[in-house]
Image: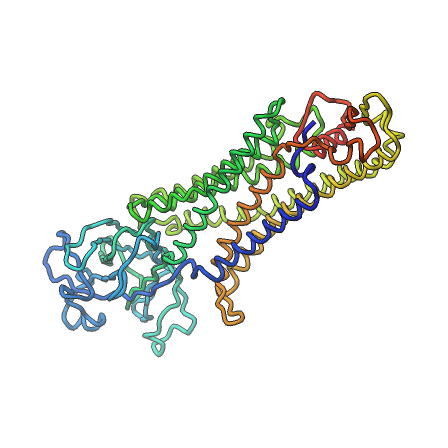
Length: 563
């Protein structure tokens, strides 16, 4: 019977394949660390205080902070009081980008954070639970002479969370509060060259709108966008990886269909993993450079969610199929307790993503973090997701330990195979009995298969662990290291390296578990090596022979579990 490549390929060839995969893995980290720039850039903006001198403010007029048609400006609110300018007549204007620059579709997205500069005044302090109401409009244009076109308008509320560390006395008046950053806006595409934001802080004492929020001096925005250089490297990596995974997936499934038996569950799950990897690899992001596809961020999250759900389910089934006995394995229904929570968790994350980025397709100023309930739900999702990830990893380690123990039990029984095989195995021999030397050679061969399988399981755990480690590193360091005259972008190396690692892992699984064109034991069981007739066939089979599998380890562990 033909086995998988992992058990039929010679050790020398397997080492060569492993070295090639390691070289590609190192290269994927170097591409991000040495070639690609930092994934994102942050630009600080200070809003210009414009004056709306019109009597009625209903008409859509855009206020430019600089340029030939710039607005009438004031330096501060003291000047506004002198000129008897009311708060409702002040418009905070921000032009994106800064002068002598322009935005590009290669930036992919824009995320803005809002910060208020609020001065302490004894007669105008920030009340507990103060909420700022902002009337905000967004416009765009693609040259410096066209009129501005409105893109979005909304009235939003943001809860202030400020702290004044010094005593609240008259001598400390004028000092600024320390206020938390607030979510402001997120755009899923950067299809235009210039953007303009106009912000109003309407005051209505009767309705208590913007009352008790302190004395706001300035409004600052922090704009975060993806670097164009990183985008080009990222697109190139995905374009390179897509055909490689697609080709190996087609090749793998063709070999499966050529077999006389139907594919088992493990082989189907491996194929599904290849499909999910191909789905996330397809570089549809190239179209976002020429089209205003604001849904690309949401679509990217959905693709990642499908892949990670498939990957987590694959690991569970991969380990479980080497623990189940012959009557339980090869049935997807037996894994509903393990796969069910993964599917449910992925669905919850999808709903959470739709509640924010789905709404942002219509209103880019919406944020689930803007309300207390939304913040609590978001934090709960993050905390629960982190706990579940840790529990899953521990459970995966436990399953791998169970598999190792299952295999070890089989391994210790191999030397005594000649005495115990009547109870555990059927040794089918044609025309003559196996010699003692032939039996020990078969034992050594199976021990080699066990070592290969254990090594693959350790690689699986290493992939999961490296993802967590590199994520932590990317969060706690400054984002780049200086080494031997080069600047290594750690965050970029994390993205390209881990992404390359998943592709190489999926590639290796489909390659190693594809049916081999050889028959198991051909190299060891020919007449020259074993001293038996060429027509003799040596096969170790379990007592239940109606269920086949991809590898000898797969069949052995099933019998061990059953016994």
